[in-house]
Each structure stands twice: as C-alpha cells, then as structure tokens.
Image 1 (cartoon, helix red, strand yellow):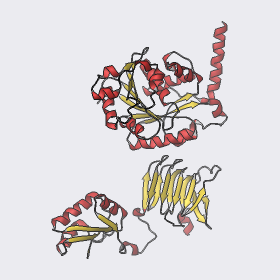
Image 2: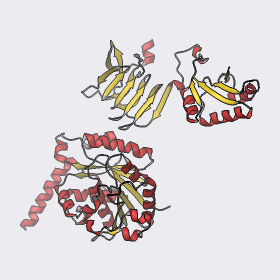
Image 3: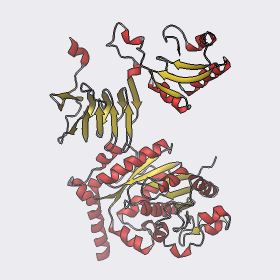
Image 4: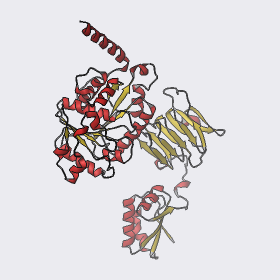
Length: 270
Length: 212
C-alpha cells in the first residue's frame, strides 16, 4: 500500500480558482520537499501548464503513456525552478473522448509509484470530466468562494464525492475579501462552513498579485512573496502535510496588512 | 388460484413453503407475498424452492413496496396486491410501526432528492438545493433549508416539522409556499401544516400533550 496522497482539487463551479490553487499548492508542497506531480484532468480547456509556465515544454500526454508510445518519464514535465514538481497533462485537447475512469486510475497508479503527492486538477461541472477525475482520487479539496452560487455547486460536488467514497474532503475558501466580509456584504466564513459542514483547510484572500503571477506563468508560491495569497497557499500546503498552522482571521487581516505596509514603508525609508 | 404466503405473525414462509407447494396442483404458481418484506436474495431462494417443487413462478403480488421493487429487479412480474391486510384490523391503529417511517441518517446536499411513500425522519440537514418529499409527513431533526414536500400524493393532513425551519419552499399536497424571509427563532422547532388551504408555520406541537 503506497503512502502517496492522491488529492482531487475540485469546485463544481468554474472560475473559483481550482487551477490556480493546484499550481500554487503543487509548488508549495514541492518547496517543502515533497515529490509532487500535478495532473491536469481538465485537458479540454488545459490551463495548468500556462500557470506553471510550462506550456512550451509539453511533448507527450498521459494518453501516449497509456498507449505505450512513450515512457512516463518522457511525458512528465519537470518544473524549471522547482525540480520536485512535475506536470502531466492528462490528454490532448482535441481528443476529448478517449479518457475513461479506468484510464485515469491507470495513470494515477503509475504516478503513485514515484511521487508523494498527486494533485488532480478537476474540470468544472459534474459531468464526465469530473467523474473521470474523481475516479482515481483518494481524498479531495473542494474550492469555493463566498458566493451563493459557488457554495451551492460545492455542496453538490461534496454530495457526489461522498457517494464515491472519497475521504477526507476538506474545504478551501478562496477569494475572501475581508473588508466586504466585515461589512457583511459577502457570505461569512461561518455561513459557508455552516452549509458545507467540512473542515476548513484554508482561507485565501483576494489578491491582485494572483492575476499578475498567473499571466506571467510563475505561481506566487515560487518566490518568497509576502503577498497574503502566497502565504495562504504556503499555509495550506503545510496543513496538508499535517502541521498545525492557525487559520487567517479575516477580521484581523486589514490591520495586519496595514501593519505590514507600515513596516515596508519604514524599511524603504531607512 | 393464487398461493398465499402464511401470515407473518403465525409462521415463517421458509418453513411452510415446501408444504404449501406440495399441495399446489397447477404448474404455474401465482404468489401473494402479503406483508412479507422480501429482498432479492429471499426472492431468489423463493424462486429456487418453487422450481425445486416442479412448479414455475408466475405473478408476484405484495402489499410491501420493497418486495415489489426487489421482484422487479429480478425480472419477475410483480404488482401491488389488493387483498386486505391482516394487520390493518389490529386493535390499536394509532400505533405506527417502524415500517411506516423511513429513517435517513445524513445531510441531503444540493441536488439530492429523498423520496418515500412513508413518513420520513431525517437525522441531518436539508441543504439549499436539496429536496425531500414524502406521501406522508416530513420530519427533519436538523435544519431544513431546501425544498420539502409533504403529502405529495394529495394528503392535506401531512405536515413538515424541523428543528430549524428555513426552507426555500414548502409544499403540502398541491399547495406551494415560499419559505419565510425573516430568520427563525433559534432553538425552536417549528411545523408547517395546511390551515384553510394555506400553509401555516407555528411552533411544533408535542403530540402527547395535545391529546390530553
């Protein structure tokens, strides 16, 4: 029995940050010394390679590995700066039909032989793409944002994961705006956990740096960035590894940010 | 002529079936399973016993929906029987046994739909986007935040009870109501019932006190 942790990263709704989370968690885990592979199961709309800056290095996909036209080592794309991290695209965007749940299980079984963490980037929706991606997962991280529609879709996905026996399922609350939360213009953390009833793995604050880093193809966690999102992803990775890191408190976040700004100003002045 | 399985309270069908089949003369056996709740493996045993006795199994009738479902699953010709139940004329009809109640443990999440032709007791929440419907009462030991339908085959006396009643929509028989917009009182179980043709919500009534 391998000790590899195969984690599905899913959300139901699109645009809540599955791929961004997968990329950042992958880098963060690799930086903490774990051999990690990120598997892009959303191969119809393949983005994970873009976010990791590896788009131009992809030659083969898992499809070729299973067809035995190439070896697994040839299809795995090692990250430029972080050798502990590898990317495997599940398939070719033009051949959507080929992948079946058993293919996914076969790929993951191969990956589990040589990695500590297999992160599966799940496509949005609950149709075949989701079913394929979920077929091979042992545990799951559900990403949601403090919006009614995202929470509703996450709830649906959690229900489906429960019927598939994926355990444990943990929650990441993404794109939290502390100011809107404190003004009660947004669902609060309690509102979300109240409905979803899952252990909270982490909170990620809305951060403009995410957009910058995404466009540049360098995940935030790659540098020692002090941006709140980078720290949040780092914390999530540590919690996944079993460390006890306290959750960020949205009501303290603004004060914290301001204090950090002040510190930054002071260092520049001196 | 139909072969009837023995009354549940008198004899077990497994003990009596060989004897009954020996006395049965026709080649094709139409079987009335009465109140027996038979699962697929019970029915498979039953089929085997019939074949062993040199007969062939024809129609199956039963008063228990589970038996009909199991029989259909095995590809047997099954339907609901209309012979009166022996248990219906028991002295105390007010006592409802566990067969009148579906117990479900666990939260219904968005997209789930729990249906039953018995009253449902749910130990868990009904989340927004989930549905729960019963031909009789819906009792939720938890928070009801989805859609609940009691008496979905027209029973106007059906009611919906929840520890926290904050549904998106309530339906009783063919009456539909939106859930209340304001927050309910905390820690107060509430129930919804039809009153003069509209759905009214009030604090849940303790039935044993009501009867006195």
